[in-house]
Image 1 (tube, rainbow, N blue to C red):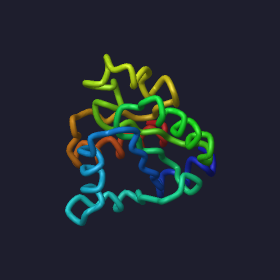
Image 2: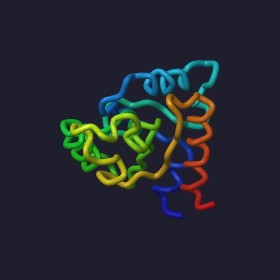
Image 3: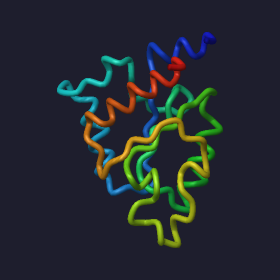
Length: 140
């Protein structure tokens, strides 16, 4: 386990990117930050710049315009950058699958490390996905 991997186990800094969502998943992500669920107890912190982030948290189905921005942000992120897809839209494009404006799923644009299903996923599911992501980084 390298030094970078050890640092990821203690404090995952997250950059949240909405790629065209209905904002239900975004509200649930923000709910994780409240004192009731307190995701910061796992060392996760929401940051305002991709250059400070370890995790790219993506919500919404990736449309043509946001796909370019997503790839650009992924390239700007310090490596290794973990990508988490939250909600049905980011996983499989959901109801937007037949749409002309959402031609490709998220995992065909950037490598996805964890999927958190639901429409929208509950904060408990998001926290469970985060814990599984940390276990994945540990190599278990």
